[in-house]
Length: 385
Image 1 (cartoon, one colour):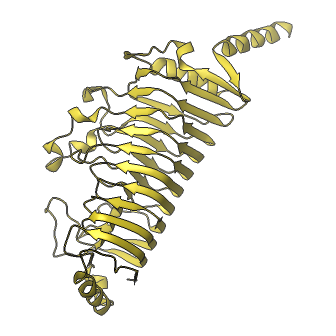
Image 2: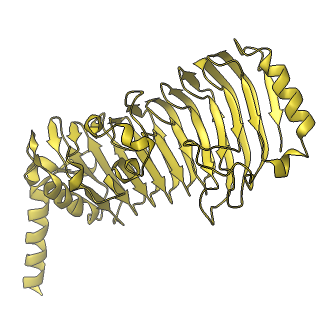
């Protein structure tokens, strides 16, 4: 019995030799596990070892990437962990430039199956995407196979704050199956010409909050996919980019309902679209309801308000068959500013549902079209399908 205790004590001492304690948390510093700050040596193994020790700790712990520049290959950081865990990034983490080093349709860094997780630290995740952006995205599935900077899969009761995602090769941040996850003071940065670089994409997740963040990218600042419920977006600055979008919906079978979307107190500048709901024609069945957009400033924005049920980005759709996504209980209130297009409000309803509301849609369109530049007059608009 005494021998077993001695072995356990020795193992614990070895574990703590690579850790320090600050503010009650045990700190697992990746440089103590061999990570080097030369920007060339892959720190994946050091990070996985530090994470493994922190995740198995019975008390709250922190994995730290201190100041410096680090190279990091494709990695999955997984739970469940025994106690709340923090991941603090103070330095700049660089993705591989060579896309052949990534598995197709996988992320660069994936966090999954973790509860009570916090990612923070003023650090930068640099996807080094400039070398792979190009016209291939316009005609093939090339872009869909590029790595997403940060994937969050089945993360619960957690927070991501103060980090920067720069120049992702594809989406910057992707959520799947998350619950009660907050993004606060996030910076997302990519040039306008970077294709398919959505800022934050939400899929099949609930209780998601995005607040006080700045998103500059080449696609949607925030895109909300099927199965999204109770999504709250507040005080987000968007632009350049394609605006804040629900959808696209209806492209795939068995998509789950979208319900409870709130976008408030946001500012969009020089974006291709403003606030948008988009569904595919000839779509599979689905629903999107209780979507509310309020107190939003538009600065030189194309299509400030748009519901498009004939969304077809590459003009290869069957427009003769209507979208089968039923949209209901949508409101736009106090949308103000200026638009770069002649039409401030554009409502393209699926014919299956259009007959019920054709008079309201037509009268709203005509009123807004005459006041398109600027769109100060969009004080209260409520449209229900």
